[in-house]
Image (cartoon, rainbow, N blue to C red; front, side, top):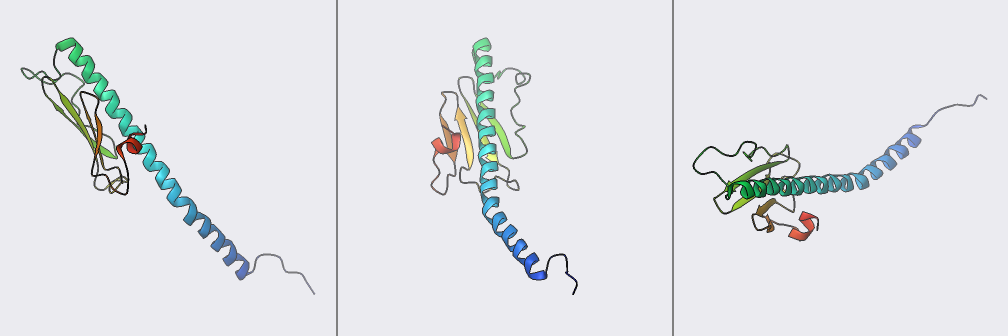
Length: 139
């Protein structure tokens, strides 16, 4: 009798089942890790933008030059591929808002949108699933 080499169909199905179970466990952890990374990125972007606006205020005595065009390099509307960032700038105050793009990976995220103002208040819009601003901002 000759010996057969290779895998049987049953052995192959067992391997596929094990890989499927491992993927089912790992994928949710991976997506949550990505969401935490995106939240951290947008929190850093808002903090950096707030610092730019504070420097502008130190030089000009106001957050927005209402008599002329916006400050060069401070048209805050770009965001990134996951969030849309907007700035509402007044003479003595500003509010930065970052909202998840509706078709992006963060749509429906438990932290919702991010909000930061000139006094350093950090908040979230549309919190869900037991999330808190402290958790979402990473403090």
